[in-house]
Image 1 (cartoon, helix red, strand yellow):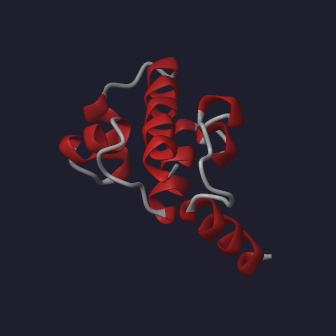
Image 2: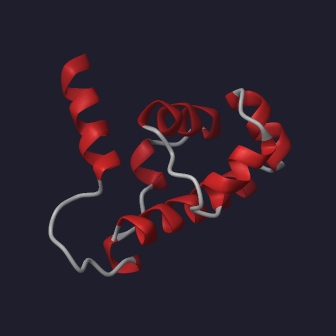
Length: 96
């Protein structure tokens, strides 16, 4: 499930970036990432870290949950949430 989750999340990041009219280079610069790293995130080849996910959502001016795949977009062969969702929820709880 995790690989499909990250692929779909990468696609949603790309969709939001394109809606904002940003190139990969422009968003990568805002995030202090290389364009290659952003490409890898958008294609699901590189797993995004929780801190990166927060920065991406902020740069795109969308809630983090807007970047998560819809449950209808992924098949879940095993129960439970992908680790990044658990980490993000834990981080939000700690901040509260």
